[in-house]
Length: 176
Image 1: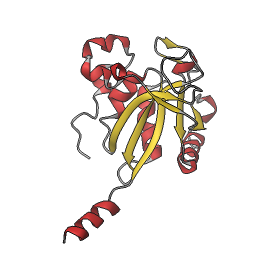
Image 2: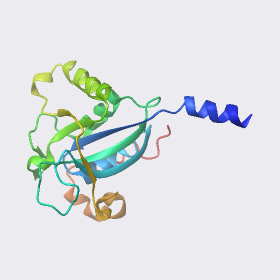
Image 3: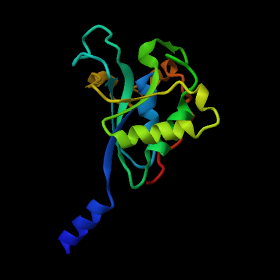
Image 4: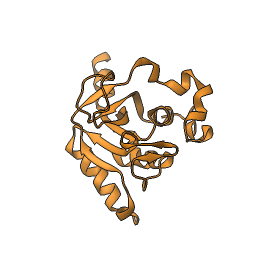
């Protein structure tokens, strides 16, 4: 009985990982962690060249590593959620945050995720205006502890995030 239950749970649960960049990582993490189907998040840096947060800027994009249950949440749906909090037409800027590290993007080690993201964008009427980059993940460096779940631990710093509080918490308390 226990073996059957564990096997049943294993087949109903498919953990996958993708990395989304949407400007300031504090807001992206605070928003996306409440989306039903998201299992875990970690703020960090995608596709830079160093292995540390203590180095000079090395081309990274601020991003959030997202573990999700693909039986509940698709890559396309994750990108739809990302589009709720970003300006997909903006290049290297989200709200007051300006610079290459604030670009928007989808990164993954899985080709099928990148194909799904490209298909999602291509299917939109405004595809030619979208500035979201879709690239293989070549490097990920977790942010320092002070940046993990920062707005949950320090809501008083919300004024530094361009995403309204009610949008950040749109899915908080929603069940899977």
